[in-house]
Amino acid sequence: MAQNEDLEEKKLLGSGGYAFAKLTEQEEIKASLGIPQIFLGNAGRLNEDRFTKYYCNKCQKEYPGSPVISYENPNEDLGEDIVLIEKGEYRCRICSNLIALYRRFNKQ
Ligand SMILES: [Zn+2]
Image 1: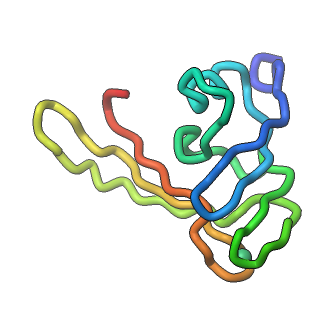
Image 2: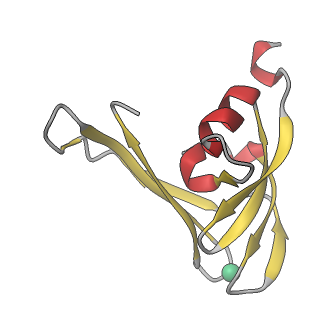
C-alpha cells in the first residue's frame, strides 16, 4: 500500500533531455521546489522501475524505460557540517549523453 500509494506519472526535466517517471506526492513536492517544472536533478535517485520512458536531446529520440543511473557515495565533508553523501547521473543508454546530474547532502 504505502509504497505505491498515489504514484503519478510526471515529466522530469534534465539538462540533456527529460524523463517520465512515477512519483509520490512527497517526491514531487521535493523535486519541483514550488515551481511547475519538476527537475530530475532535484528528484535524486529513483528506482529504474519508476521510469516509463525518457528523451535524449542528443539522439533526439524517446526511449522506453529508464536512463542509465550511476552514482557514488563520496561522503565528502564540505565544511559547515555539510556532507556530500551521494552524487549521481542519468545518462542515455544509447549514446551516453548526460540527461541529468544530482547531488544529495546530509542536509537539504
Ligand atoms: Zn542519446
